[in-house]
Image 1 (tube, chains in turn blue, purple):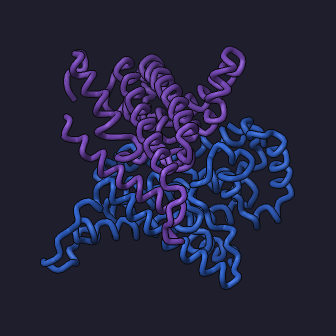
Image 2 (cartoon, helix red, strand yellow):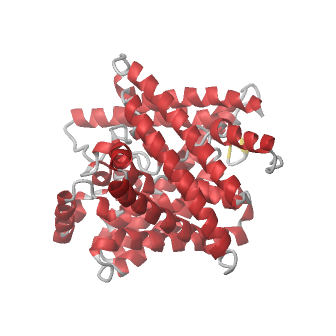
Length: 256
Length: 197
């Protein structure tokens, strides 16, 4: 029971995929034109994440290490297709609003990242709640960003007008440039939080860099390193072995 | 969409996909390499070239697979799974082929190729081609134009980042936030292209 709570807290706050790990930025920017779209995308991703984490965890002893990435992709893609068909059938308006970003959940690095760093090394129930925590953390982040953009850009939240009539909406915030501006300020706030935590002597190694480092040089760790759950690795000698094998291969290309 | 068979229609598609609805700045696809490999103009251009190469090839292969395998077998609902596997295999294959046959080109593009597999722009283009009912030829052109747009955007961003590397910005805004603000300003500029069509 304690483990479940810990996993949920981990995903929602401690390792929030958007605010702390800075993963999955494409959908974060693209679909947060309104709070509703953000919530819809977040919950859709949560559904896929929970189910894929569960199945990958159940199959973790069956999937060989060498072909695990393609196996993960097939599992994730199957769930994405199922969720997409369900949305088309029952929530067509949400499906239209999110468009091509639903099938693109397949390449959302949060999902593959959790499969790789947690579900592949942990028991099904813990993985299930890890997915749930991460998914909810993602949903909360997307809803917050969506609400912020909706307030600034249209003056409403979930379609309800909350700003006084004298407020003139800044239309650009619901357009593409607004997404970049909002995310820039969110990241700046997280940087400030990070440096103040550093001053108080707290561990900030979990904070993602948001990929401003040169990607071409992070074959060994870098991006994949950020998926890394230090706790999971301590529990799992397998993880270390896999990691060492990866280090031998300078670019880690055999995974792809 | 305009009549695709005419030259004018194709030109409109080319401008529309590369500038007006720019893949990074208005559709937010391929954001990770856009932010991650844009520190220097040289690497940015290399990445752009690799993306043009892979996306054009991937939209051709995905188009063929869709038309001659998925549609006849009536399993178009499997498109997401099939496309992602086809793209991953294609990138791997291209990498092996270049390594053997064209070592000089491999040297130039090689480091970027593995990064492209998980680039959502590749899958995004393949899915958009299907969604908009483009034929194979139009799909290839759309893929090329989209990738061209990516290259234009990433090279411009790299140029701007080289210029402002030593600028004095407030500490929390160092790194990613400044890059995002720059990208936002670029996105405003690219909004201006919508008047072209």
